[in-house]
Amino acid sequence: MSVLAINGGTKVREKPFPAYSVIGEEEKQAVMEVLDSGVLSRYLGCWHDDFYGGPKVRQLEKEWADYVGVKHAITVNSCTSGLYCAVGATGVGPGDEVIVSPYTMSASAVAPLIYNAVPVFADIEPDYYCLDPASVEACITERTRVIIVVDLFGHPFDHEAIMSIARKHNLIVIEDCAQAPGAGANGRMTGTLGDIGVFSLNYHKHIHTGEGGVIVTDDDALAERMRLIRNHAEAVVEAKGVTDLNNMIGFNYRMTEIEAAIGSCQLRKLDGLLSDRQQNCAHLNERLNAIPAITPPDIRDGCTHSFYVHALKFDSEIAGVSRDDYINAVRAELPVTELREKEGVLLACGYARPLYLQPMYQKKIAYGPDGFPFVGPHYTGKVNYERGICPVAERMHFQELFTHELMRPPITSEDIDDIIEAFTKVWENRNELTSVPTVST
Image (tube, rainbow, N blue to C red; front, side, top):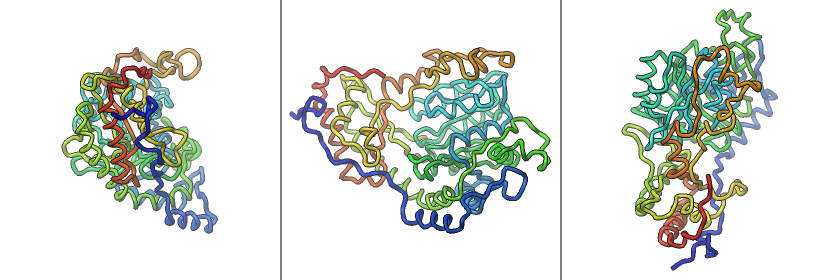
């Protein structure tokens, strides 16, 4: 019987996993062309042809719109900025509510707060981890204006059900597809499943420009409002003839020419990178199925998954040990990944602690010390952020779900063999874990 590494035994693997590095000679050449041109940005924060940016920005916007199949693509300096533009464009303001996911990166829930609206957390699906349509509908009040859905881990949200709910209640749907470029449902790509889609080009996404984002929509009016918010709207509206001034306080959310040039190169690589991830995850799913306590991710009929991370479930009752003890023991068998050594092994219990448990929501303090906008003259609701409001999200995070990034190219089949060996070794020797304390979450 092998001694587990967490108990002093020999690790399955010491050699670091290869870095996920998608920058090549094409990007270097594109950057040099921008540098040689002398035009690193061409934006002007006034009404002028350069209000819309330089040639590389416009090129990427056209390429992205063509790839996704929409009329409008608007580049920004981050997906976070894109979400802020999207919420602002809808006209959301004080007293309004926006339904959001509890289980995602914080920005998609904070976006309503930028406009002094109140986030309301609906629960997630236990199999796909996107917003549960039934929970969404239960959260709707006369104050609801927008639903922000998240294609979590790369799986598209249930667009047929949620868009039906949105149309019934006259709501706008913003799709946070930061983790799902190139995925789709029923022949339509992510980003087009709601009214507005927002992608990320942050350094740890499928493709990246360091920092950056892209917003997409087929709605002409929303597109122009998002372009205004991106680039100093208040200084532009008069000369442009804009009469609806709601949320026309602008920001500087602009992308540079260097980032856009890199983005064009990266977009051409996306399909190949997605295929590699999908093949690696299929290989892992097949092998991990041999462990009775592990359930690989499910995929909704008609959907394709882009696998930002590989998310699986662990059944502690079948295993006889907790998820945390088991995953921590697997982590001890494996090495770090190149370029991300300080992060430890890229395998974790859960994903993001349910957002409503953060201090801002628990104390209901955002702007000033008195609880605005959660309380105040504009808001007539009484939002609940108590533990237990999203039981599925809490169960997934604290008990069942685990995620890893050990499927990103250039991970090889030999690398996957080592990963499987680590999971199998711990499974076969899990009786050793009875003396290992559970790590609190």
